[in-house]
Length: 290
Image 1 (cartoon, rainbow, N blue to C red):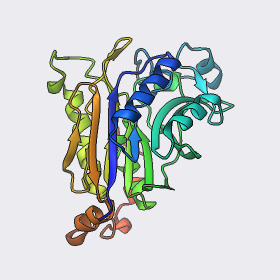
Image 2 (tube, one colour):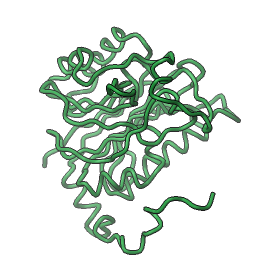
Image 3 (tube, helix red, strand yellow):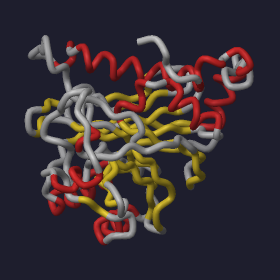
Image 4 (cartoon, helix red, strand yellow):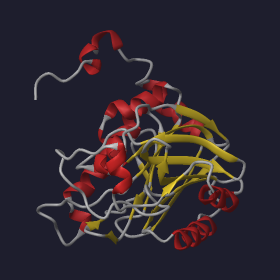
């Protein structure tokens, strides 16, 4: 039996990069020898301080004029510093990427040997396009712990996103987030928050319907006007939660024999094999009815 130790983080990250490096180093030490450590969306430089309207629009020029997290290059010194901390551990983290012509909300998987894979957030909620351009692809890539697909926050609300990575051979999906509590009808107890409940449902459903190991990180605490729901977790390919931080900051750690768990989940019902794409035409057509 070959097991992989997964660690999913719920933690508060802000604008201070030196503080972020110190936090990353501490989490690596606390991760109990994890071979994969999933850090939150926007962990280098913090997320947006508030959300806008779904009707908001931005341009490449206007995005660079906005106050927000520092734009970082994939080959820049900031990620190289995380690589030095990572060593042999596969670390997944979020940054505001300076993509040259525009800015992107980006997830990066890396080890001490370099960058393994990159995902630019595709689905943008509540005016996020004022600060970031959208990505356009979901794909998997090979790593020392297996074939991985990445996604960011609101991406998890779209089953096509995780399915695309699974069809590209992903055995593991790492979903990093800055997922806040509900903006209306908010509750004091985050454990009862309706957006927190959606977050958890999406994590379990995406793991189950694609029969993959699901590793979900999230911001915790507060930033600007946002209060994050934490709830980092590791979910098995049968949809069972193997480890969960709850709404507080912490690390959810689980040992998983990925090959054995995937084989067991797919023995009786193999969701990917048993698809009927010839009947799914509407899934790839533009929505014509609101």
